[in-house]
Image 1 (cartoon, rainbow, N blue to C red):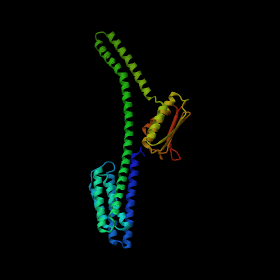
Image 2: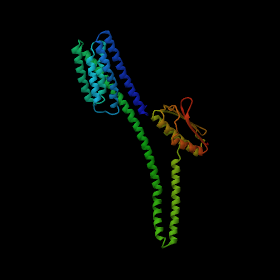
Image 3: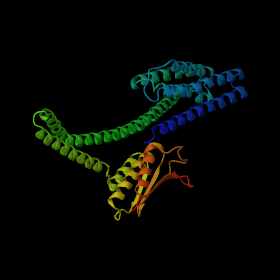
Length: 371
C-alpha cells in the first residue's frame, strides 16, 4: 500500500464513505421505525429522513475537500453544520433513537476537526457537546451526566478516528514522495557522475586541441610544415579523446548483474512488493551478465511504474531470466520504449525476449541470452 498512495487513499476514503452511509442507514431505520410506532409524528419522521439524504451526501464531499491538506472552513462545512442542527432538533432524544441521533452532531464534529487546528477543534467540541447535552436534558428527563458522557465519548472517538485516518494517509503519501525523491536523486547523482567523468576526460584534451588548432591557423601562412605537425597532433589527440569517451560510455553501460539484482530487490521491497531471487550466474559470460542486468533493471522499473504487484519472483538459470509478478492481469496495448529497446538489444546479441500475462493471471518477463 505504501508504494501506491492513490490506492491507499481510495481505500481509506471508501472505508469512511461506507461508515457514513451505514450511519445514515441506521438513522433512517430508527427514524422510520419511530414514525411507524407512533413515537413521533410520521410527517416529522419523513422530514428527518428527507433532510438526512443531503446531509449524508454532503459529508463525504466535505471529507474529501480536507483530506489531502488542512483547509479553511468552507460553505459546505457550514451547510452540513446547519443540516446537523436541524436533524438534531427534529428528532426526539429519549430511548434508543435518542442515543442514535446524538451521533448526528458528533459525526459533523469529526469532519470539522479536519478543518480546524487541534485547540480550535477542542473548544468547538466542548462547546457543541455541552450545548447539545444541555438541550437534551432540558427537553427530556434524562440524567445529565449520562447524556454528557455519551456525547463526549462519541465525539472523542469519532474525532480521533477521523484524524488518525487522515494522518495514516499523510504517512503513506509522504513515504511515497520520499521514495520518488530518492529515485530522482539517484538518477541526478548518476548524471552528475557521468558528466564529471566526461569533463575530466575531455576538458584537458579539448583545451589542448583548441590551442593547437589556433596555433596551426596562425602558422598556416608562415610555416606550413610546423602547422601540419600541429594539426597531426590535433588529429591524434582527437582520436585518443574519442577512444576515451567510448571506453567511458562502455563502462557506463556495463551493468553489474549482482548489483542490479540487489538494487531491484531493495526497490521492490521498499515499495511493498515481496521479492524472491534465485540466480545461478557463475557460468555466464560478461556480455551475457550485462544483458541480463539490463533486463532485470527494465523489468523492475516496469513493475514499480505499471503494476500493483505484491509478489515478484526472479529466476536466472542457464542464461534465461524469468521475472514473474502478480500485479498485471492484462498485456499493455503497446510495449513501452524501454521494453522495445531491451528486446532489440537481446535479439541483436542472439537472444530472445518476451513480456506477457500468463494463464494463471500473473505477468512474465522472459529474457534468454547466449551463455
